[in-house]
Length: 171
Length: 171
Image (tube, rainbow over all chains, first blue to last red; front, side):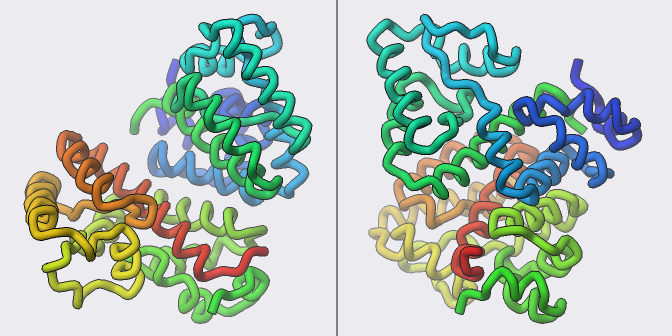
């Protein structure tokens, strides 16, 4: 059930974190700290304040958040460990209907990316489809680590924005 | 001359606003308020805090910022009133090398957009070229006003991010 913005501006910390703790993958600390930045005037403002918390965090915490993301899962991969949000998002990108060849390519690229950067490939699946995801993986494998940390944080902000739309009523 | 981030974290308000007042078109109030959000840990964090200021502002101020943007200028249009930043950005999108037909189309779309929404069409010119700009104008004319206010603010955040890269040294 989406929560009205007025409730988020007046509720206690536990309620706030319960409503928004899932926006950043397995990282409720973003909502914990965002609580201090209330009141917010609308959903875009709430998103901007949460992103400011993320950007203010020490590099180690940002990397922990990036590492909290699951690998993109091909059809044959076991998806049991995904959060409910990640499972839905990956399905919307058509990752669950890849053929065997695409699935093998995805696994190869996942592995190469992790080996190169030490963290998983993060992309806002809902804004992509399986073709654009594979193309993006190939391209981003060429980057250096600093570029990819920054890009991963950008993608995480987009993921959070779409999760926020589901979590908070327009207001 | 780009300013080091450490200077921005330690300088007085006047220096801060002098360095960053141009990031948001003719709207130094964003930097004025952003000053209170120091220290920032890196350029992305600085950008996120400034965007949070923008999103926290009352709708009237956001609209004033959108209205502070110049029309996109075709080759034949007088560009004398553009800020130096806007002139460079529009040139990078190839708007200064449109032929007469494209220029007329741009003017027609500018006018239609302003009539429909009451504010100018805002787009991050440096991330576009003249073809994608014309296509985007046609598409965005179909939106409603709320969508376009939000989209204009998104574009303004991108413009500010690129101006910030020119204004602040990596750190």
